[in-house]
Picture (cartoon, one colour):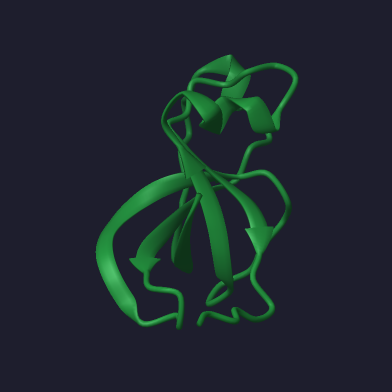
Length: 87
């Protein structure tokens, strides 16, 4: 899992049926403090986050596991980060 910040959304008129009712958001990779530290990418929203939220996401083969229907996604937002304590 990695950290990111929601910076936008994607609107699609036609998409794979397994993606119906699945919000697609633009996420910018971040370090553990929330500072931008990676590329922007599209991620499916599994929990209902908003613009500007600091989130954690899963990529690759684990990304579709956030849903029973296993949509064709390679990044999924799976949590909202309230705080990070790093030593």
